[in-house]
Image (tube, rainbow, N blue to C red; front, side):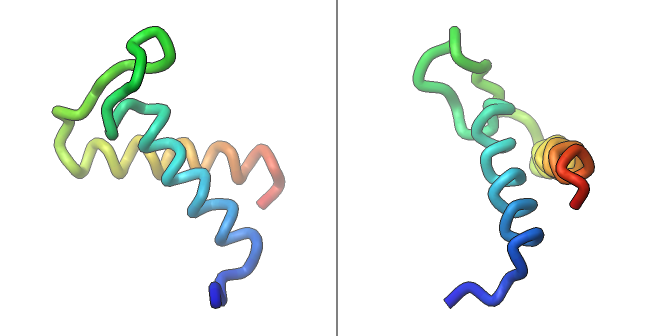
Length: 61
């Protein structure tokens, strides 16, 4: 059972999807999003956290 509050769940999902859409996991089609798998871990996490923060701010979380 997930004990996270809905706001924390939203932030986590946004963070993980950011990894996908920022290209950290590769891409099925370069037209959809870039393949940026060669970034260092710190940069990937910074980008994913930034996207999550912006989305949460926009939702008032």
